[in-house]
Length: 285
Image (spheres, one colour):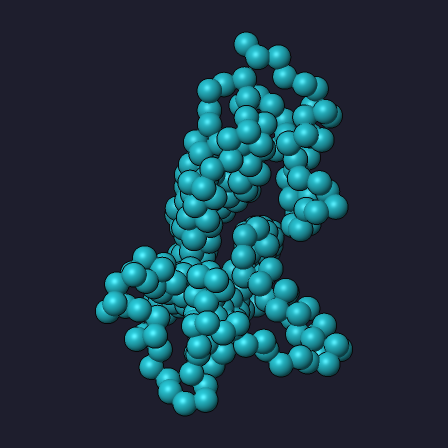
């Protein structure tokens, strides 16, 4: 059996530099726990990609249990969802220790997020449905699951891949795909145009708003918000006594409105700013 360094030394060598860790929850909570699980798993043949698969299974299983309704199932669901995020950190630590980071590993990690986040919201919607017994809740949950999967972003990436894959085919040459004419037409040999500079104060405010919007709509912040709200519903329990809706339903409705507007805004931005064409030109330069 391979002799591993002590936990303290292992933490320094395979965990990201705390100064560069961008996710507060990972930095101050999950990384404190994940290193111990990583240490145990490094004594086994488990690969980083297999740890990533465990993350997906835990997250989706948690979402399914959340959909069962009832607070006992919900507590187990939240535990599995949180444990899934621990494995989201473990897989990278295993890859760094064994010096085997792969493109497939990054792909599987991104795929997990694309599956787990909509699954959590769908589970939350069914959880809320059991509390209020109103069918419209399921419809809202379906919409939420769709918009939380970032369909516009997926379409942009799919389009870029399509263009890059077929760029040697005359039928799909970049010049033939650009339909706009006149002074706004893109020149394949030109540098992508820069966006207009905003005043520094406006730029800072815009960046802050975009950062907050991105954070609350993505993993793990969305997971933690769901966790706190379901726990709050568990503690309140008698919401019907005062004639109100459960917090989980209010959260679901808020996320549906927020993410729908976010996707619509991004779609408009893609069209107006010709982001796909700019990205394509930057790739082929």
